[in-house]
Image (spheres, one colour):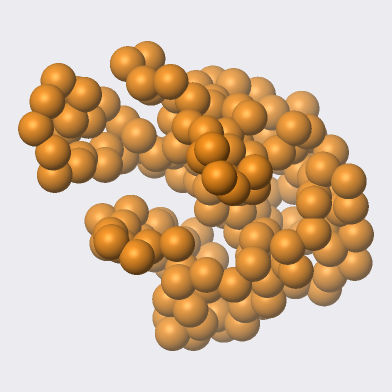
Length: 173
């Protein structure tokens, strides 16, 4: 997945945010298959289990049948056609999630070779807030941050100061 680049800045900000919201040692269900950030959470002292790659639009049993106190979803919801149902079905009482924000100067992301690597939704912050609130979550903390790229051009210049990611800590109402 990260053959040429590794999102060091995003992972550092996400780790800090997670540590401020969730105590070390918490049992976490991380939506999505095991990935480099799952390993970072384990190294930070969290007990992490990942979902098995099932299509969460069709099968939400992983979030219904867990004893984890926290669900994490880092850059997952934009890939789902119906994130509302997954959010509604989460049994855990705490959620830490991040999404890439919709950028007005770039089209929605779509891999032409991997059907799982496509963004059906590219949210604005208020849209994600509304989705969380409608599905029974109360946002306790939020943070936006930029993600500059090491390229030359107009869009890379805009990425220097345009927030790209949105992190949220929420609790079940």
